[in-house]
Length: 189
Image 1 (cartoon, one colour):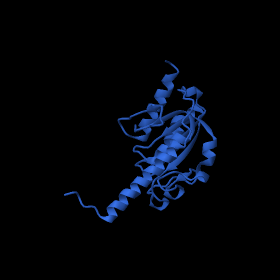
Image 2: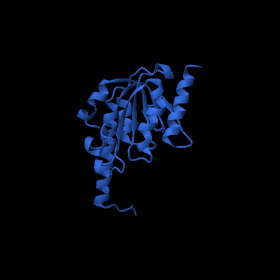
Image 3: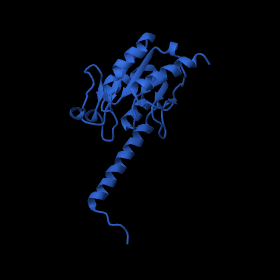
Image 4: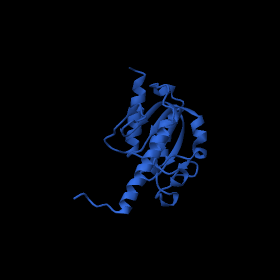
């Protein structure tokens, strides 16, 4: 006898299917061509950092960036991406950091154009995704942003990253130090 499913369960399956359909269609519209360039630390002038403010210890990321990368004259921007509503974020980012929350994205997690237009027009030397778990909006932004070298913390299917660094400490500071070490060794090889 086949398993019995209710109308509500079937509705949930349809909703999941539609969400995945919209996500895949949005990713397929992005331009996949870009010039990959493994840049040494001394040639990086601009960077963008994507992070999730609802992750543990995410409040410390701006401080870690300024202490670790401030000595190298790297101009960086932060973009906080969270799949929750703004009111549900435990430690919201400072007001100067743009936040892509649930209200600023379409159904499925695709960011609204007016929220990200200024970022999409810029060219960055380095993109760093600090997320410790997969979020579709991070995946979309990592693919959409124009950066010569893209670095992430997690590996997943169709990843946009040129380099994925796993840190054993799983701390943000440990990841940033490992990345700093890697970028400083590129020039010496």
